[in-house]
Structure formats: structure tokens, C-alpha cells
Image 1 (cartoon, rainbow, N blue to C red):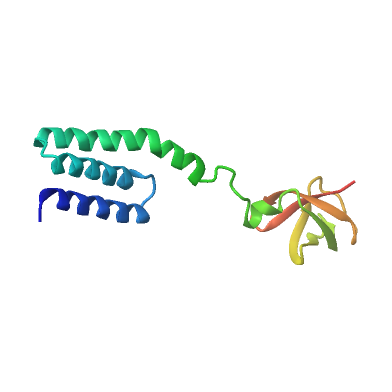
Image 2: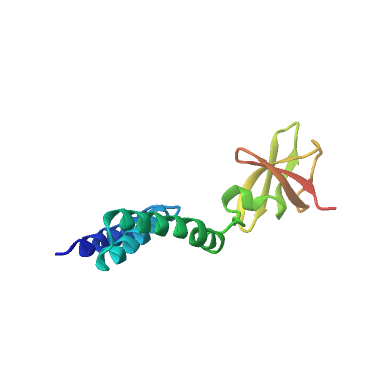
Length: 144
């Protein structure tokens, strides 16, 4: 087995490692090994192979990685769990009363404990909007 075969094998291993890591570092190293293998195949000296390796890593890291991170990773994160409840509307199913410490609302079929934003009493059947969340208690205000 020739040296350039080994360099390509190491490059492939780096590509496989990229599957399990983030940031495209292993992928850049893999491309660097492919560049070094090409240099070895054409009989270049070791110092040129090292330079080709470094050039391949730098080229990939600074030119291809930004494109992959721009289109491969979502920057607009989808709100999930509690964060998705903020600004949603619900219906009061149990009177929200700050003195009695009562109040429940229903949003999308789920029942939540609720408190009013301004410590006001909100009657059953009122449509409310979630403005914030404290632990598992939704802080709401009437929709009007």
C-alpha cells in the first residue's frame, strides 16, 4: 500500500468523524489529507505535501465552512415547549383570582395554571393572552 492510499484512508476516516462532530473541523482536515494525498501521488516532497495539507484545511475552513454554517444550520430557532406558549391565546376555565390563588386556562387542549398580569380577577370564558411564564404558571392578560 502506497502512502497516498494511507492519506486518503485517513481523509475518509476524518469525513466519518465529521458525522459525529459539529463545526466542520474534521471535514476540513479530511480535505487537507486528500490534498496531501494528491501531492504524494504526483511525487512531491514531504514539505510540499504538508503545505498542500495546510492549504486544503485553510481553504476548506475559511471558504466552504461559512457556506455550510450559513445554509446548514438554522438561525431562526423554532420555539418549543413553554417558549411556544408566549403570545398564544387561551380560554379561562377556572376564575383567575389573585387573593384565592386560583386560575386555570386552556390552550390547544392543554390545561395550565394561570395568574393575571396586573393581579386582576378574570372570569371563566374570557379569552386571555400569555405574556410570560414563571416556572409552570402562565402569566396572562385579557385579550381586550
